[in-house]
Amino acid sequence: MSQPIIQLSGVTQHFKDPGGGLLRPRLVRALDGVDIEVHPNRTLAIVGESGSGKSTLAKLLLLLRRPTSGEIRYRGVAHSSLGRAEMKKFRREVQAVFQDPAASLNPRMTIEESLGHVARFHRLAPPAEMRAFLSRHLEDVGLSREEDFLPRFPHQLSGGQQQRVAIARAMMLSPAAIIADEPLSSLDVSIQAQILDLMLELRTRTGIGLVIVSHDLGAMKSIADEVAVMYRGKVVEFGEHVFDDPQHPYTRLLLDSQLSMDPRNRRPIRSLEESGESSGALPLSAAGCSFQFRCDLSQEVCARSAPRAIQHGDGGPIVRCHVVNNQERADT
Amino acid sequence: MIDVHERGSPSRPDGESGDAPLLRVEGLDVRLHVGATSVHAVRSVDFLVRRGECVGVVGESGSGKSTLARAVMRLMPNVSRVELGGAIIFDGRDLMTLPGAEMRKLRRKSGFSMVFQDPLGFLNPTKRIWRQVAEALSERPGGDRPFARVVKLLEEVGLPEPERVAKRYPHELSGGMRQRVVIAIALASEPQLLFADEPTTALDSTVQLLVLDTLRRLHRDRGTGMVVITHDLSVVAELCDRVYVMRGGEVIESGATVDIFEAPEDPYTARLIELSRASHTLGAAKLCAPASG
Image (cartoon, rainbow over all chains, first blue to last red; front, side, top):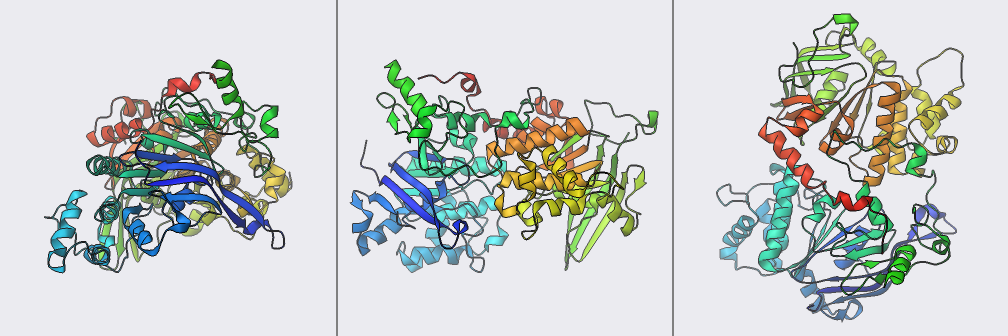
């Protein structure tokens, strides 16, 4: 495969937990030894529940944070050795799209001012051609010239249109990669499909590397080339067929929690015992697998040591689970 | 006949064998006036909830689904003027003409309750859970002490270790637990009808299931009437007997959930179902297979 645009190796991000007490602050491991690569012309979906560290991961991919340990490489150069010029190039080449498009556009600026601001800073077009440049890029994301979006303010646009503007702002810099953090979750279902189509179309046309962080597994299935499933700061499963052939018990649980869309075939109503929920926060035990308390495959080994990530066969999924990996070893 | 759009389940005329609907809304119109502009948020909507029935109201943002529920409960947004038209009959009483004090009584005791999307915005961060639930308890002379009744409620909404949860503060609970605390508060007044506005929207999928289980158990065991307002058709598929589809303030289609899902008549409904289905069919067959190497 080509050289990755961004490469994370062994990246760990710790935060001090303000709830941990003033004198004995507790460390929260938001990310714990994450390896991930962003390649051109590929779509990587990062999925997981809230608190799994997926948004922290997005921030690191954008170099909006520096990791506690581990290394982020941009085109082969470690983040600690990126100079001023390289950093500026990074800021141009790696673009972000966020969850709430209204919040990512200045409410007091027209679309023309918002986009023009960025375009002037990066000298994307000479002043005389600026308007035409911006209109062309809005057209690329499906906002037609006839409707004249440039003089409008963000609140005069629908949520879907705002998200298109945010995507246009990212795309007009001809980026090498776009990191999108929950780009769909504030949009209606019919709009979500349009925005997904747009992102996929742009990715195919321009060959950028696309990373989408999402809790919506269904939407990711249609767009992702690779999927990273995160649980408590770790990538527990990574591969191309995660949705069709899940290996990790957590991935199975996530997929199994999807609702049916079939009123004749409803899920059985579970009792409290069947749902296997406990009242307190799950113990932050340093030893063992972080999923052991919710896992129905859990064995004695899971409490003793944290599982390593092991690849199943050549090009197969990378799984971080003692039980599944032992089975894989026994089979081969 | 009230529901002109209705199909699937034949609706009976009123008064037959004392089976009058719990809630009957006829030709409801809601206009919101803010300054010089006005919005016709709900347009001549007919709506019906039978006793013990779970009804879904689906639509995208701006469809008027939340305004419909708030209009029935008379919890309207604080804009300069709200213009209501039509009739709202709850349990034989006309809510349009009901004095404010009577209306408050309905909301407080054995009338209706509402569960909102954002439980943190609803709960008081400085009070322990049990006190907040106890405030909403319907008065019952003699009998159990409030704490015991609260614990029973928390247990009923499916919270593990209810005594411990009762003594905690909202920030010490997860989002799914808070949402169930809000449901417990809604149930504390022993309502006949529960409105749930996007009850699972802010939640992760595994937690969403826990809250859905709670609502379905309540519906099954208590027979509380429910109106579930959501943009998520899969929630309707799992939960509701009948469904109303709203768009632009109007009900464009209604009927038994099974009928609407299998043969939607309106192209908009069909498109919504198709899109939701596309994002919900995730290699389900594979999930049942045991773990293999």
